[in-house]
Image (cartoon, rainbow, N blue to C red; front, side):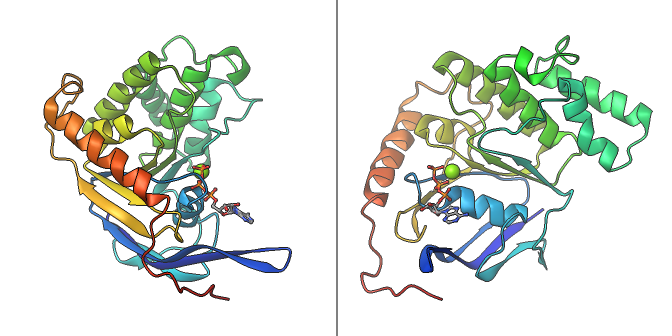
Length: 262
Ligand SMILES: Nc1ncnc2c1ncn2[C@@H]1O[C@H](COP(=O)(O)OP(=O)(O)OP(=O)(O)O)[C@@H](O)[C@H]1O
Ligand SMILES: [Mg+2]
């Protein structure tokens, strides 16, 4: 599905003081593209993802899926939260099947999808354990495949691979890339890791601390799968470019005299 963010603004009221987080943010993600959001802490990445997911209302503007405006959660959008939010009282298997039960998939279909996902994420044999019994990396994989289970047309992920050691992170990036190559769902992912952004994305959007305004929008033109590309010169050039952009996004100023909207 094509995902369109159209002039989205969001202000929170903190102690009656309006706090403008996003202002007039617009961009479009083509169907089947993998797009990453980078930006300084607090620039509004999670806020934007929550608006797209339908968990939060924009103060102004619209989110459209294939041209239709959406403002509440829907099964066509999968979500991986920043803290991965697994249900601790359900096993890995029950966590993954939860959205499928809600959507009334038949028992046969559920069993088939479960096998497929466990295999994709290399989680076979772990399905009867509880979240507290598996490692952090497995929790993150479980959260990703739970979001993928109902075959969403759009997958929204908020730092899905945060807090992992580099080796595991690289492996999970490769798994995520393989899953995405197989499914070709439209992805919008948040990360703080420039290397991860280059590895996974067709396009990287850099948000600034100035109301989340876009400080850069770069197309990553590298062949896939990218496992062997990490060391290449072009790969490194992309990383350097993005690192500079992220650095400048902290002091990005498009218009110094902006007023807060109410
Ligand atoms: N429910 C809320 N009420 C008030 N202010 C909020 C709320 N949610 C977020 N904010 C504020 O909005 C701003 C953006 O927060 P957000 O969580 O979107 O940042 P982020 O870009 O995801 O940061 P990080 O990289 O640290 O996760 C912050 O200043 C935050 O304090
Ligand atoms: Mg966040």
